[in-house]
Image (cartoon, rainbow, N blue to C red; front, side, top):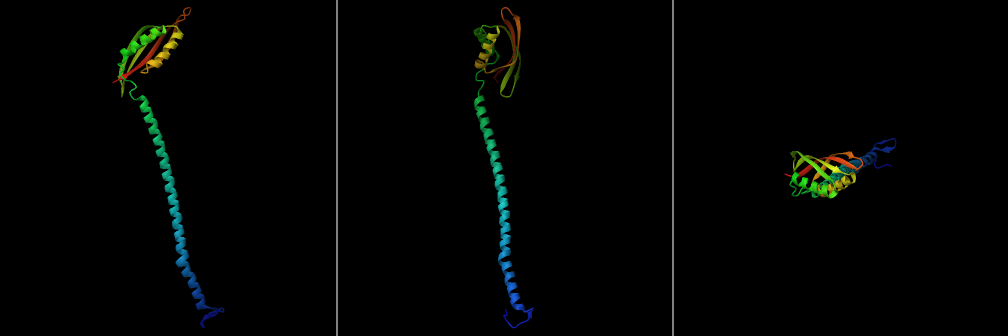
Length: 181
């Protein structure tokens, strides 16, 4: 191929070869190199966006977990709100305990109040009670305490047999009585 009568090297026109190489270089510099750089930049942006999406998803998962915890806490607060309405304390607990013992056929021998500790939202009074009766009657008493005296918790209970022929037991209860401040 001969474009002009200019120098030839190995039977190749140097100017034509230069023009072809120049066109290839111009194409490379003008089209391919910017496209490669743009492709690399788009890949980097895609990776950054993927990382941001993963980060946002993990934050969203954490927020969902916090929301569920807040809902559980709100539910718990609704259940425990005003759990001790108008409970005057140990005097009411002793009267109620005496009534329940009488209903269950037990004898309340002694109630000894202990220390009263002021907690953050309530007062807590330790006390002990000594009761005499049969074991099935004690079982009924425990059910009644659970149902009617939600503000009383039994910390410890000991049962000792007094008279095995009459099935009499001595029951010692250690109680925590909760009341409003």
